[in-house]
Structures are given as structure tokens and as C-alpha cells.
Amino acid sequence: MIYPIVPYGDPVLRKVAADINKDAIDVKQLAEDMFETMYAASGVGLAAPQIGMPIRMFVVDGRPFNEGEDLDERDKDPSLENFKKVFINAEILEEDGDEWAFEEGCLSIPGIRADVFRPEFLTIRYFDTDWVEHTEEYEGLAARIIQHEYDHIDGILFTDHLGSVKKRMLKNKLADITKGKVKVDYKMKFPK
Ligand code: NI
Image (tube, rainbow, N blue to C red; front, side, top):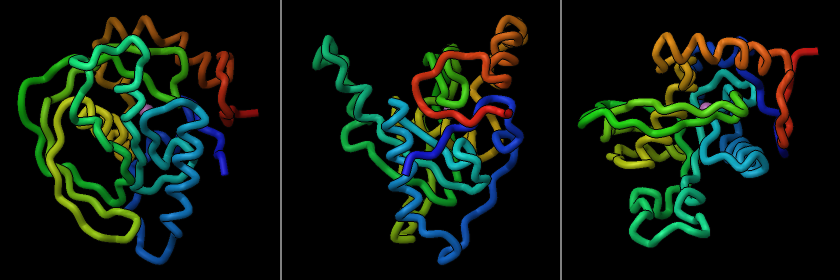
């Protein structure tokens, strides 16, 4: 099932999402629906708040970043190999390394992209859809995608990381997105 994606301005995107109780939610079904929703919107990550659910779950599939037609073999990011995962009740235990800039976008903020600085490495603990606990280290674009999605379950958006000048420049565009005055080729849920 494809869910509509909620836009910038929806209060659900600003909530600190709650941990999921095992047995309360069919996480396998939800993960399947979240992947379907994400692929339909050509995204590489999707967090539950973006489909209106303030719970600590996100899905990622970074492999499309390595699949560009004119992408040279040496430009491929090894961190993205097999990087299709579901993160439940995740906790970032540590972030480390130099901050580096990458141009981010967000399915809840269509039409806007901007450089965001984040640390290079992270350690994260989470449950998969079989409720098996994992602690793993990530770097490169895999770490980047996790950091962006993890922010979502804490009510943070990539635009929050921008400087005040850039934020001011984007203010009207963001207000338009909230009102649904934006062109988008996937299903979104704008206020009536
Ligand atoms: Ni996002």
C-alpha cells in the first residue's frame, strides 16, 4: 500500500517519535508499505512520521545512488552496497569524524535541496523486522542517509541544519510547500 507523504509544516514531522512496542504493530507489513511508498516517490529513505505515524521506524535503500547511468565505477560508494534496511527503535550511540557537506533533499520538502554538514561516521543500535537487535557502524553515504532519517524520528528536518541566511532564502518556498503550492509527481497529503 502506498501512503501519501506529509509535507513540511505538518506537525507530525516535528514530534519526537515514540518507540514501537513489539506486537503492537505489524512491522513487516509496515516496512513493506514504507518501501513501496518510498520507491513510488524515488526516495532513498523514508521515516514513519513522513506517512503520518509518529513512531521510531525508518527504511532505507541507498542503492539507486550507485546506479546512475553515467556513474563511473570509481565514483560508486561502497557503503551503499546491499544498503537496503529497516531500522526500528534505533539509537545513534556515537557520531565521529570530520563534518562533510552533502546536498540533501527530502520527500516531505519537494523541490528543495541544500548542502548539509554532518559527521562522517556513526554507530547505531536498532531492531530489524524480526526484532533482532543489531549494533553497526556506518560511513559514507550510508551514514548520511541514516542521519537524515534518524533526524526525522526526532522531529528534525534537514532545513533545520542550514544557516540563517539560507533559511531566510527558503522561507517562502517552504510556506508554499505547506500550502500545497508545489509540483510533485508522487502522492502527498496536503491540508484541505
Ligand atoms: Ni527526509
